[in-house]
Amino acid sequence: MTAAPDVAISTPTSDALPAREPTPFWPVLIWVGLQFGLLALAAFRVPLSARWPVPAEQLAMHEMAIGQAIGGALLLPILFRTLTSSAMAIALAPLFLLLAAAMGAYADTERLIWCAGYVGLWLGACALWAGAAAAAAAQRATLYVMAAVLLLSAGGAMLAYLRREFGVPTQAFDWNQVAPLGPASGAVVILEAGPASGMIWVELGLIVFSGLIALPIGRLLARRRRSTAQT
Image (cartoon, rainbow, N blue to C red; front, side):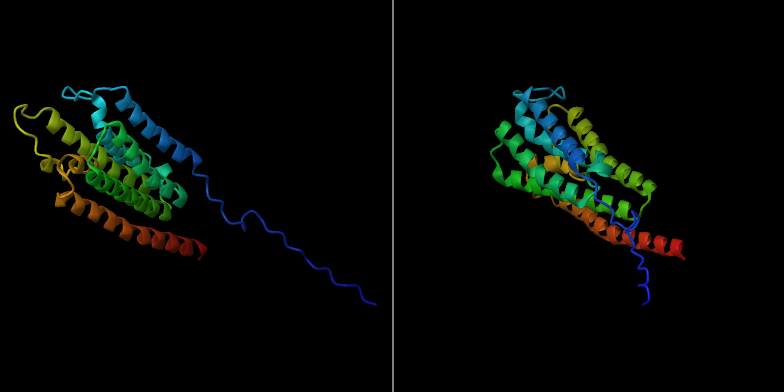
């Protein structure tokens, strides 16, 4: 009678286990806290310029749209790290815009919908570029993307603010002049002048389109880097 051969039982190692997706709780919580802070600015009637209207909460919608455009760029490395957190950030944005519109008694529903769609597309573009940088597995690429989107949103908003604040007081302000100054000013253009300005949509469309191209390129570069490392 022959003894039964020993059968080696292999146990999965930690390297063989699939990587667990990090929880999006803290990035989304920071995103929600930022928007509650924007609502608090309007609720406490904090004036942000010398020409701030009275009552101050009537610009709650403007503050929320600008804050979401700049906040999405500022929180890009952590907020758009996973598909779950990206989807939650984009889904929460129109809800807080609606709260800001209710606080400021903003009655133009059509412009509200267009503004929410515009901000949502910008956040989607941020998610695409963050995904492209993460797929490339290069920390420097993430920093470059963050700097570019922050300059486009915050820098453009600052230029529009300076032009509005230090312009000729007696001259009517043309919002279409600040339409090309990034997504933050583009959202305000929709609220003030309507969504008919084609420049803001062309600019945003180019950003989204370039993100759709950059995402597969980043994944291709990462795949080539892994294949080179294996050989």
